[in-house]
Length: 471
Image 1 (cartoon, rainbow, N blue to C red):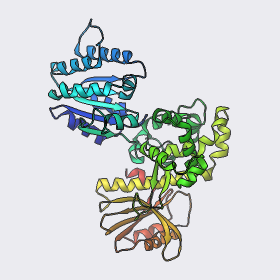
Image 2 (cartoon, rainbow, N blue to C red):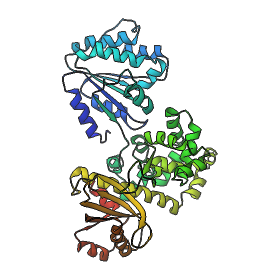
Image 3 (tube, helix red, strand yellow):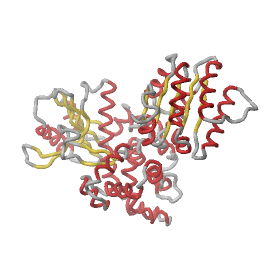
Image 4 (cartoon, rainbow, N blue to C red):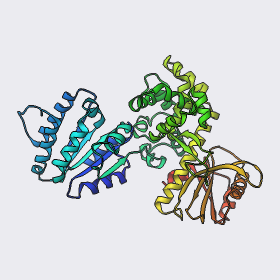
């Protein structure tokens, strides 16, 4: 079942129907659904869909020749002698099909690894052959470093040829909901906090099993399909895998400052920034700064996992990989996934979900203003003179509109105190912005608190069930 990606499909369709040559670049890390997206896009079209493999250049060229001959109904010919000859044939005969041709070259980095001159041959073929056609060429790859440097980068032979690009990201919580249609709202939050929004990971969940059983079979079993996934992804993208593993272990254990991360990872603190930037480029980590601070110049930036799956894996799986490999996964779960640490982890990811809800409300035009910033704030309360934080902050670019949110991923809490603190935290923000407040909760709140909220126009209370129902 194909889920979501409506914006990406619409953008690809627009470029397919221009009547002139187009070169789209689609990339993103493994398992994110690139091939699935392009297969959906190819439906109903004349399409040359070729997927390269990690084999020799001769084998890839032979396989490409077979795909070309099959599309054009040619038989009895030997494989093309070169990529240039094969590409020239496609360009010369594209109009013979009677309708625009979609040409998808999937996993381009594999073919280019076997033949480093392939990007140059593609560039020459585009300039001399394809520009005169209405072919829509799509170059796709999972190796993000290669796609950004050797296809999109300024020093690439293909630089300047692309007419659109799509960096495919994992689903948000709300985009992922259709993949788990039978799960309860609370379980949906647990699943997203564990597996994130990568479609392949979510597709491995067995809806007939409970949350813990799925986690046991997929992550805490030496033969589980996701047990070694982070290392496999790092090996595809990076050379110093052990070093990056150490950095991610440090962040997974709670280190947030570059100095802390470097000390726990056992690396030079002066080089930590370079490695963190590389991981950020892969969408694995991110640097957060509190609302009101410059995203680059702020000295209060903290590093966190950007992907819930990596956050879960390096918090709960990585420290116990040896035990899991001994087939002691059930014992590890009993020790590591007790209620408190699991709910603390889920609570942090619930904050991300609530920030995504604000972003979705903005896209839907339901927020009431255009948010220039969505994130959180931490610092010193100017009145109480104590450390404080606000889980969700959204503000417009002019300082006139602001949304402040508190997230409570607990079965019970002091609801009146939570509302009091949420209103009090507004003291940390100077200016006369119109403020609205949202209390995000795991479970329904009391009738008394509901009555208090109903009497205020500036306050909303949303449970996990509310978030799912209104998605």
